[in-house]
Length: 424
Image 1: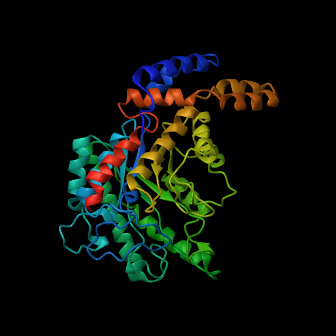
Image 2: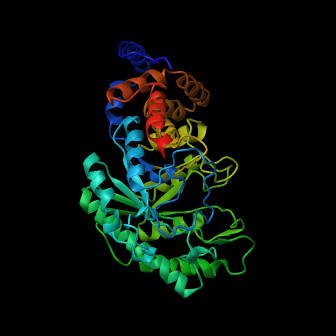
């Protein structure tokens, strides 16, 4: 593939873009400086189709499904970290990584999830220190025999419920240790698949147990400098179509009452709902929010994120709320049908591009027209802004971050596939 643009061409294009945005009062140099602070938490499970490294792994379940069998899936921690490094080298900016508990490395020993410890993530911590990146964390309350009933923290089986309470407690300890070891806050997100295929007769019973479990889990307090607890809702799942105990209303109520960070997953709402519309309401009552940026196609399918209207709308709403320092971006998609590094890089770059587009928006002009009641002018300006030369500013951002502009990075992935992935 021919190199898309030279350095001189990128700088020439950027000069034109800077003038075009300046006409609307936007300082692109300032925006690019601010972009250096924008971090995305890049999820490990795209690299291995959510297999993890458990010795007695049973395969994905609980509504978790990665389709496809593209060659080169990471099978070990070392392979996954190597793939991560290749992806990070092609993504502009300094970002975070996101682990699930099933990515513990136990040296071949069977360690149950309620007994995992920080030592099982020592390789990840040492690697993160080397790269100077933060780690986020998640308990894995699915794909396990103790989750076969469809319930975990909300289970009426006390043995099952206690097992998952101990697992999440162990994960909070690990997450706090990770934050302390790295000197960077670790965000730990809790999601449970608890629910039923058909209409339940005791909705409140399961939710009461879920609340009781969470109350016990959060009895231990950790310094938010090292650990931020987050809690994620869901509308439904495969085999859980009629009832989800951890619904949006449950999570929102519990999080606000208990000072826990709410997680909005873009695939965990009805397709006619707008996640962007929820952000301003939540931020009036919550200190911060965690986003799981995904792409639902007809359902919570976790397709690779692309630069589409939904992704842009979320970023725009954060910008219009002046809340980029209060909303944490995490990715959540997995596609085993394409090169997994291509998926990582393309999806993360799309998320960053949407953030850049939003940050370049002359929001003050839109609000000014709105406050005057000139709604026609507001609409017309929104349309004009869509045609401003975002691509030229994006290329400059990539150049500043010493990463390939345009589609030049595809050649790097091809070379890595031929040299590394093909041998797996």
